[in-house]
Length: 145
Image (cartoon, rainbow, N blue to C red; front, side, top):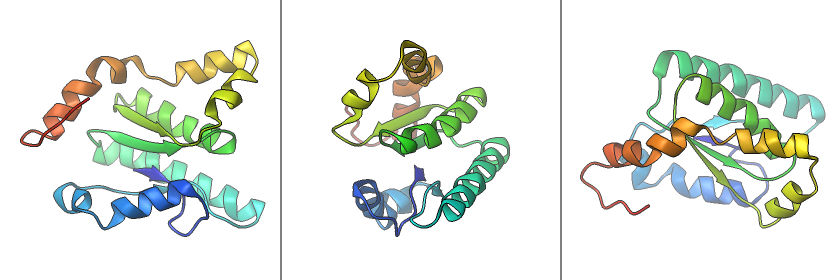
């Protein structure tokens, strides 16, 4: 799961902290990769670069069945875009959980070129195979999509 730091301020952190000690992490091998932290520009950049390296390692050697990304608009979206692209190139399905009520405004204000980039971050293999993979992962559990 691609998340902000567990101590960062914000709504995504609250949601993710709910997952951390839930049944989900007991039933499945959930690994958390933190891409953001509160602090200076150097601390934030270091956290993001570290996350990219961890994710590349994860994609190459662990090969998760699914990557669950928590993003928002602005910097969060662009930070997670590289993770989504790496997962896509590695043929790992992605669920990009976009938080924030202002994402539509963020998108509307972008140039056509940037809108194409944003639209391209929905990997076609995820759209085609996402339901099948989620059903396989949750074999004996109720699943509604």
